[in-house]
Length: 96
Image (tube, rainbow, N blue to C red; front, side, top):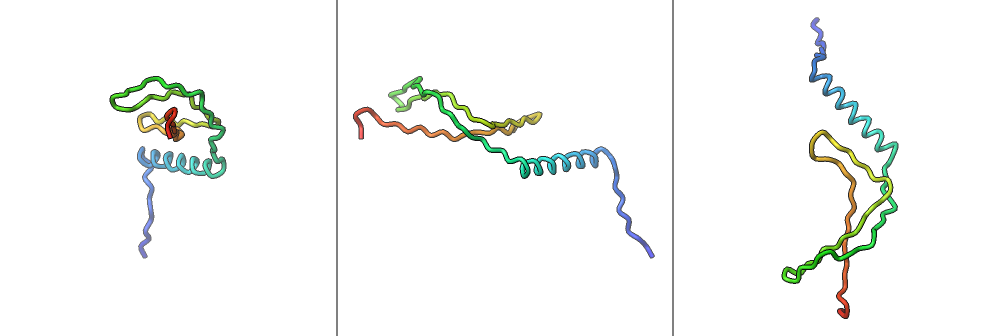
């Protein structure tokens, strides 16, 4: 009777795959156990920094901050950074 035996080769590729799988598992476990919630978004005083009447646009500048922000830098791009969507509404003076 012949038995099939699985042999694991413990070379550099195996070690790399093992480290990667442990890292991904730990990261997944942390996101489940420790949820990350950015909150308390604050927008500073907006200022109009430039206006182009030919192409009909104006630049708006302001400071933006929030609590519990996170950054995760790899050794090369792409990097994981949290972000916020910002929409600017305006109304012309004397307009509808």
